[in-house]
Amino acid sequence: MTKDGAPALRMDSVRKVYPTGDEEVVALDHATLTIDHEEIVALVGPSGSGKTTLCSIAGGILSPTAGTVVVAGADITGYSARRLTDFRREHVGFVFQTVNLVPFLTARENLLVVDEIGRRTGAPARKRADQLLEELGLAGRGRHLPATLSGGQRQRVAIGRALMNDPDLVLFDEPTSALDTQLGEQVMELIRDEMNSRGIAAVVVTHDERMTHYADRTVHITDGVLEGSPPR
Amino acid sequence: MIVWKEMARAKVRFGLLIGAIALLVFLILFQQALRDGLITSFTGAIEHQTAPVLVYSTDGRRNLQSSSITPELAAQVRAVDGAAAVGRIGQSTLSVRAGGSITAAAVIGYERRDLGAPQDLVAGRYPAAEGEGVANETDASEGFGLGKVVRIAPGGYPIRIVGQSRDTNLQASPTVFVRYGSWEQAVLAANPDARKPLPNALGLRPAAGVSPDELVARVNRLNPELEALTRHDAATKAPGVAQVSRSFLVIFLLYGLVVPLVIGLFFLIVTLQKARTLTLLRAIGARSRTLVWALIVQVLVVVGLGIAIGTLLYLPVSFLRVGSIPLQFDTTAVVGWGLGILALGVASSWFSARRVLRIEPAEALSGGGLGA
Image (cartoon, rainbow over all chains, first blue to last red; front, side, top):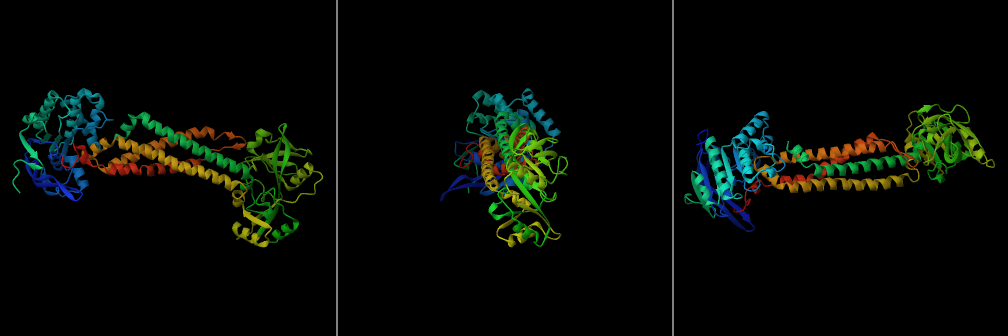
């Protein structure tokens, strides 16, 4: 349950269909998934299985074709694009696989960018950014540009950015795919510790089964169908 | 923050664009000053004289020196209804010895100070006696300074410069305004065998309740051998002025194409290069409007700095002379071009803004969409 008692994520019979010419491609087929407060779920599946689509819908980046999506008690299914944008900014944290940091901003500024695109709280945001950097072991790296940070440090900055808005749900898209095994393990451990210590639910998209033991639960997806989803 | 940080950390990239815009602004302002200076040096004496309406002979083709008003034509004009005052104006280009050398100068004689003399003086006084004249202030360096005596060559008729006016040249030559009688004597001194010269034009002042345009229309109905023009039309429709204006207009239109192309292409390239960053920002909750506004702020800052630097480059140059053409710092031109270039800059960022608006936040995730 989230802070107000609702699950962090509840997806009921969610479908996502992409029209391609005269045909339709079903990327997600009646997916049903509930993630509790503080729960970390590893979403595992091969390329093209629909895990990124599921993650996008859960985070309000895409809208479902059918079904219901409730994040932290808010039914975002019918939200307009603009409302979804605001929702993402205020309630969801993202750590992406490839495009993660703004290259011309320092580590600290990459965290503060969340405040800048939002309500601009100023001093409290700066305090929170400094605190997060310290907690993530990056206190001495705040003024560094992403290009001067190691892969692991960049991921930590991205995690810090994802936590800046005090989210109800954090979505990790293949967070270890660009890292070697040892660094990947460290990042997964960090994700688990940070999420647990803050009581935030998370979905970790991965195709690497070795990383799943850091999650509380592993959900497999194949051809857009979640394992364990109730039959249509 | 993002806007400033990006510019601060890509100084060379944005600096080059600012430099390019500054250069374009400098060239535009310089050529504008050159055009204005060129036209003023050719027709400033007409534009800035006191007669609201000038009447030429048609065969003079709006060229003061080529026009000639016979006594019969003058009598017709003097009788026209709506003219409060009529005065003769004569003009000749004569060889004048000034400052130790002989130069071609335009000598303009006016019968009445309110019909053909310079509108204002910047120094000295108007001629009070024959043999006194007013010269353009920029001709002082050529021997036409206040208190100097220039002499018609040949003949030696002396003209003492007792006043200085501004922007009152004719045919890009040193120009001296004298009383009508002085002009006649100067012409006869230069050519003793000639008959008493006819006036080249008539200056008219409309009666109360009659506009210059109405008076022009009435005079033009009198006789096809007469052509009346308002002061402004006489200046802008003088032979060659329209051609000069058109030539510069073509140049300015080219700038109107080049400026938005340079700015638009630059920002489009920058936008394409940082498409992944913009996608990331959209994905984490930045509104499209926020990103477009950031783009517009960048355009305004870059173009604004370019205009400021271009104007600073133009400032010292605007006090120079190009040959016999004096340049001037024209605040109206600076403001007008500045606003115009800013508007063109913002308009040219439309393609970049469209690209920003089309960004799909889903592209931030691996695979970014279909079935991933």
